[in-house]
Amino acid sequence: MGVEIAVSGLTKQFGSQLIWDDVTLTLPAGEISVLLGPSGTGKSVFLKTLVGLIRPEKGSILIEGQDIVRLRGDDLYEIRKLFGVLFQDGALFGSMTLFDNVAFPLREHTRKSEKEVAAIVHEKMDLVGLTGAEKKLPGEISGGMRKRAGLARALVLDPEILLIDEPDSGLDPVRTSYINQLFVDLNAQIDATFLIVTHDINTARTVPDNIGLLYHKHLAMFGPREMLLSSEEPVVRQFLNAQTVGPIGMSEEKDAEELAAESGQELPPLPPIPLQLPTSDRTPRRAERGAGVWCRDNGITPPPGSFASTTAGVPGVRHGVGA
Ligand SMILES: Nc1ncnc2c1ncn2[C@@H]1O[C@H](COP(=O)(O)OP(=O)(O)OP(=O)(O)O)[C@@H](O)[C@H]1O
Ligand SMILES: [Mg+2]
Image (tube, rainbow, N blue to C red; front, side, top):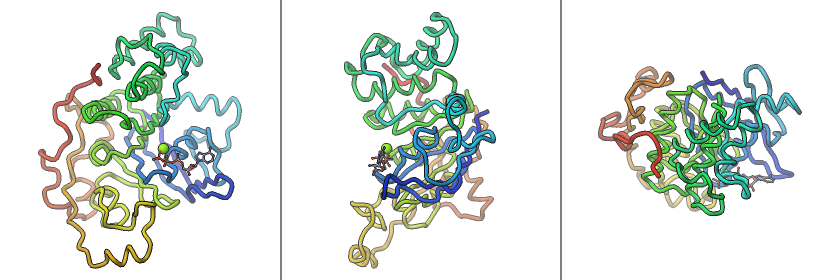
């Protein structure tokens, strides 16, 4: 069932530009975590660092007792087989059909026959709603379709760890709901450890077991969903409720004058914590915690109206993303 990823003291710089400093967090095995943060805070760089494509200056990333930061050559190649990655831009090969793009990891990393490859490719393309588009080239389809093709490719090796960079950018709201349902159902089926980068606040509030927030070159907070959704910490509160009042300004941090102008303003109360999105058939995921359990165990009173069934995500959405 999935594997734990323990990140400790991770620091990344490009030349003199510090991206983030001393990031420490553990992605629990088999759980869904979401990573949030203003544009440019280094979320994509973080995902690429986890998979060993970018080398940090300091820190460690432990997976099954091995430190990705220190692996080279064949060892790195081997451990990468644990990962399925959907890059922010889809990263499809422009001259290959969608079928060949999705088949690529299978042909590269396994000895499966072409018949077996075809069966897996068709299954995963169906899962993301791309049946019938197998012969298209990436340049001939919409941005949302490219995202979904990238997702199908990330799934073909039945990964232990899924890193997904903005699956919802370029998707319409209905497909975003389908994709969110797909993640929850997939997590129940394959028990992989998920890390999803998103700007969609509804996704962040309803899908994950854990939420992390990168802000101002460090990890502002990482923990269970209910911990962040009940947090009064100004940056967390502002971001998770998409508010303009708070320390985050249009160009990252507000200056003293802007903050002073806000100082008398009353913050709106924290909205109710929604129920977590259940699996389509309502069977609990292994990582699922009961609604309100974290708050109760930690002596936190959730905002009024929390965990009412009317605050859940889109109800009744079924498997598959539609054509
Ligand atoms: N290979 C690279 N070389 C130099 N700088 C880079 C490289 N990759 C990313 N950066 C810089 O790192 C910073 C963080 O970029 P990143 O793409 O991780 O942001 P992000 O949080 O994913 O933003 P967004 O929400 O817009 O996708 C940016 O300033 C970017 O220019
Ligand atoms: Mg990014």
